Length: 199
Image (tube, rainbow, N blue to C red):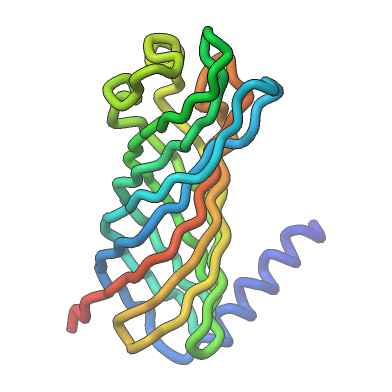
């Protein structure tokens, strides 16, 4: 019963804080991914960052003065650089490139021009790492890599204009990228989003 009262309080509080009617704006966004895989227990391999991009669409559903629900559909190129010892005990470098269709839901809390946003994503792999690898566990990675990932992100944004926004966020995967690895996606994103007025 207490939980019900708390929920009702926040609903009433949110409605009372709203100074405008509910609005919806479609938009686009794009930016830079600084991606890598988290370290495994193997001392002979080390993952490091690689730079790539993301691009996609969003819908900005403003429910109150403070709270906005923002579903997103992004194409996100991730992966990692990797340094390892080959069969001749020589140190080599390569890249693991994994692309995802990322379905996300950002919960945005806005304070004047600044906002804090947090939410989950469900990522579906849309490209094969096998084509990008030359010497590092080529068939192994392709045959056993997971086709999906789930992640949590948290970030901050700044409204440059009413429609243009700069944002930075950290995204952490929670499903290993490979069935036999304990390595997960880690991405730092910097980008811009633009919403269109629908009036």
